[in-house]
Image (cartoon, rainbow, N blue to C red; front, side):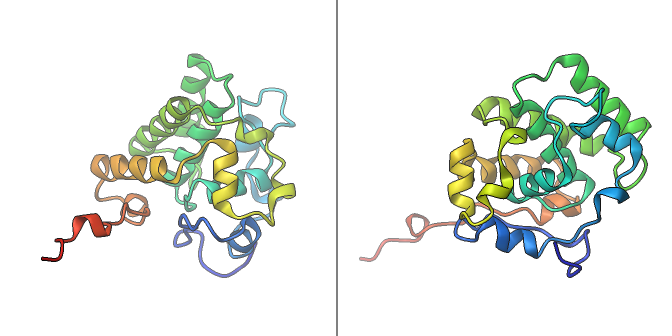
Length: 196
């Protein structure tokens, strides 16, 4: 992790060729000790009341990268929704508990607003629909040298499916900073007029 770009401006994109280490080394962040107790209580695997998909900070950051998400609350909401859902153990009451705690117990910048809750739900649904492997079980340190496209394929995350999910999010929340900077589906030559 670097001290380069500010947390609010950093985004990893969806480059399939870059290695996880290359992108991780450019990621801004804070030490584990900067994470508040209420976040650690529900999201750290060492907690007795941790919710499904709980993972250490390093693994969580790697999931941000694999999913092509920055560090804004809306990005966090998507990442946590995908991670919890991909665990295969998320019950309805746990989904509700996380959303309630993140809205009423968490403080900025960890607090989820109403719009962030919509994106959390999109993340939960995305992981369930695409049957993503449990991301909290990935040995992220072991795949640091691997290209991100290979890592995504191994856990069942399709770049195209992510781009489509990002388009849905942009349509739902077109004016948010996080949605505006999400990677887009690019027009291909098939959209260009054919030669005579």
